[in-house]
Image 1 (tube, rainbow, N blue to C red):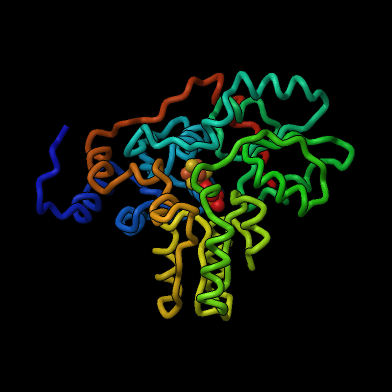
Image 2 (image 1 turned 90 degrees about the vertical axis):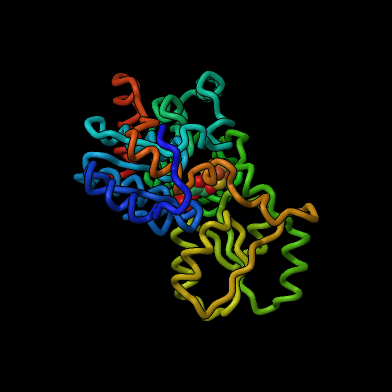
Length: 313
Ligand code: 13P
Ligand code: SF4
């Protein structure tokens, strides 16, 4: 593998490679700022899935985590999909092993199975429909009132959506290692110091944090709120990579990271999986067209059906 020489203009090299291999670089808002800046498109999980569905580039370079790149591959079997670091996983997806989830479904016969996009292809294949944090309410609303629902794997998002839609749901007990770090106590203290600040939270946060929030939503919804809100200061309870886009959208506003419980918990809200991708790894993966996402066709077809059902909604 090529060693990236010190002083190399990584931005220029990546631009050159995009043309050479006919690639589109997609990045999630939780990527480090440099990776966001070199991407052709930045978005939340839903927007990235849609973009992956639409692109006519031959190569999709996915700067996000494994389940996102895998979703892109499920939608584009004929394209090459590469991820700068194959180890970029997701604690939510890991919290839902396929065999245990199958047993869970079997224990609740007659339920519709709604799975968050933060799952493996094997779990998607067991599901009736997929959702993301930006369309979960709509997806739940599309299921007939008389059909009981299993929701997995994020129990905080599940509880939040159950409350919003008034639907009872059986929840898989998964959590996101990043979003459960935020401390209600320390956010309250920060709010005393910045009483005018609006609190923004992703629905993967615990209920007690969501109760404090002025606005709860997916990453793209939090960004829209920053633009629309008259507030000048915001306490942001989600992965802080998103603050890069918030600052670009509203340079005159101030963004404070919501704190975790520990005294040195500045970095504990950074997703260790998302942050595995760096500009250097991105360059290497474009040069080598590896690591590549591969998926067995029979599994792909079964996972495709519930994703398509979501995208049709
Ligand atoms: P969004 O779909 O809101 O971008 O969330 C993705 C994610 O992984 C949240 O932790
Ligand atoms: Fe998964 Fe949480 Fe990281 Fe999102 S922030 S990718 S849910 S571990």
